[in-house]
Length: 114
Length: 115
Image 1 (tube, rainbow over the protein chains, first blue to last red):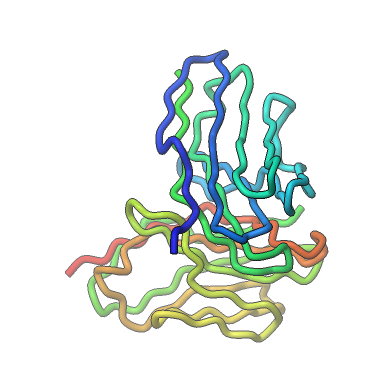
Image 2: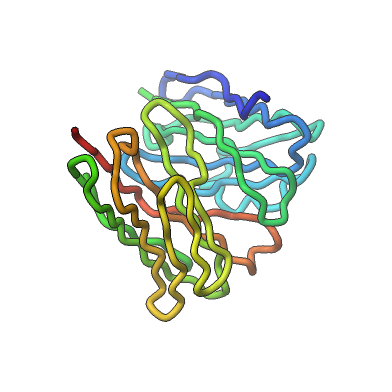
């Protein structure tokens, strides 16, 4: 079956612009996670959704970052007033439920802020 | 806070050599431990996991044992292949986080295996 998909695969933007990154989880997966991976580092947790609600957004770095999952499936990560330090690969993962099940990762969106 | 430390790469080995990638962790609760692998051009994949002390996770010839006394989860393989060339990430999930896997990753170790 289809895995987790993320669009776009690459996004180049200018400092100060607004961007949206999309994640399509595996069908039926209720848990969805966003991570950010900077160059040479491991992924860092950003936010976790169980269904439509953000159960844990403790990893969002500041209020320029926001994520939604209005129908409990597709999720969008939104970044306002982008900064060069936001450049990274943004990873999405989904899981059958929140209870310690394996997370399946998408290929990521590489964001470059010029 | 919780953290994971793994050996720096790159690790370069000849085919059929023995592999060890060291991983140690710091956690306040009782974490589950994972190894993820990222092959070139692909997404992260779960390689193996262990959920309690002394558990051994294994998959595709790779093994790792959860050692609570040394807070370690070293990855080993007896005979590596060229196809094992990838970046390997050690990760933990602390069970006090509320019943879901909030993963904390190490920085990753790049493995290059040559014929």
